[in-house]
Image (tube, rainbow, N blue to C red; front, top):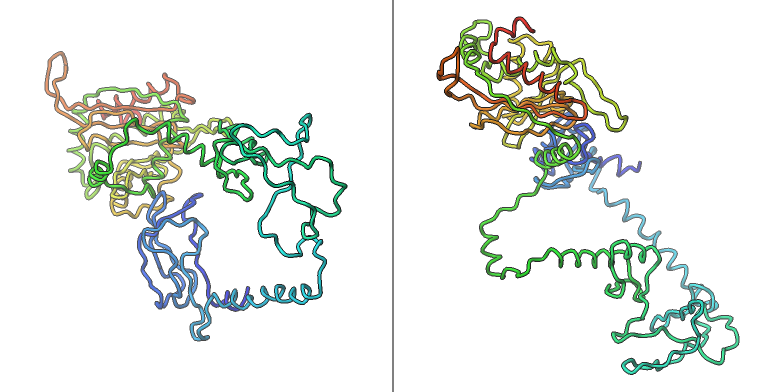
Length: 491
């Protein structure tokens, strides 16, 4: 490490989660010229899982902030440089490359006397460059006559013979005796291009795989050679032509529509959620079952628990009892608490329950989880649930709090939704949707009465949870909510 590198230290974007590859810079707390100390928070970043504050690990004065707020930066990329010895002078990190510049020019200067001493022009790499570059004649394919083809009616005849050997052309020396008939130039088509497009074998294979005719590709390489980029560009043009509408909208129409649209980059939590849901939906075979439950007794119990001194100051609501009911059902049917290991072709059964709670936040939908929720009492579960919701709404949920979940609850009822088919959180086997609780006519003890009714929906991974197991779990949750005294007898 040079003296300049020791003085100007760079702080790189760290991996603040489990295998994250990028993060968005939300806010800088320092600017160039500010003094920073070891452990001081210099910026806040948003990863695919949470918003995290980054402390810097050394002292000094901020020399440069590499990225603006809102920029997405790959893990391992320097985001800020710090002058750890500001009293050492005005040297800058760029001084090191500048010092090496004369050394890079030295070989060119040293080559001048050699040119003047008269290097042989027929050696490779020496001699004056010709005014125009010409390719050597291509060798004819087996079975093809070497004589020049007769010019066609619409094609111009070749006007210049094959280039004579020249001392300035290394490939022309030593030349064999000239043949009676000179090697022909490549046959030209009506557009002036060679009849067989010039391309390397890998490029030809790529064009064949993509269904692209090299005759239709415009070359961009030296001497008219078609490159891989040319083939990809032609393939994209063909695809765009296939997807183009029959009648393209006018410029005025397009401008009018764009004036009423907003485009927001997909990043952070939204990007991670989209990727996770696509992976889950197209990897795990989902099955969703529904049950409608009379939860009148549960709603009465919620009212009673709010008056309980032991639960004073804690979050007591229907979701708390739904969570407890699900934990009871898992205890009675432990095989639901598992995950599918596709790499090892194994089912991993878990003897602990990290209960995920889907939470809508300003940053998007996140799913933090309550660690070892199955071992908590009702007051402990209420306390953990309240802390989880508060932290999520404040945007302070850590990546660790969203890792390692085993099963999830999503409370769509708070939005007035009766039911849905939730997508399983990746790495889990099931998710329970809790619908809105509504007063409905219900047959109770042989009579139609108004009762508090809700709908539960359980989605599960059919690779490891069959219909019997999924049905038992959902039926047990419904039974506990219908008669909450079973929380005591079944727990």
